Image (cartoon, rainbow, N blue to C red):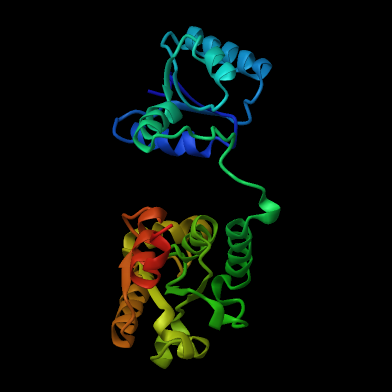
Length: 272
């Protein structure tokens, strides 16, 4: 169903509108064309977006879907005049809450406050830098500052999980690969010994691992199914022996993996 457009229109980054919209759209077996239009904070910009939305509807023969988080009533009024099905995320939730709290919302434009004085934002930037410095076992420096150390075979999802934890939750996540030399020695890399309680393991089905590795090194021993089976079995055996909790990334999204890690390692980060 890629012949139908969905617009995410916001006076900020558009992340909230897109996140909410995608969560709802995931309930339907469709794959529409996604269009994010951030920073629509003036009447002129609103008119421009309306023209774009209407043109998409005329071109596709179906009215577009619009998810919006516009706080400015004048801008919102213009958007509501488009030839589309509009879902106002703010009014859907904010107006009932205004009634429940017996107070008016501030209708603040955008999602983020001033980054220069936002400690949460600075913590996330620091966590991202930490994840990059400690990616793939590159550094053992300051590992004592890590909230979690992800371990597992190469290409099982450690790096994207580390970065997601940093960007979304401000978690300082390092990741260290388990390699054949570790299996031959029969114990974890020496850099991990003082931090075993911080370790969390990722594993993956050998067939899927082989597919991923073949995209990087096609036809290599590294990517062969037999080698992947051996490495996964040895890694799981080592994590089991060392008492490290682990889960399979094969059929789980980054969000699901990260939430499981937070629940087990830093449950306090699930409370805001």
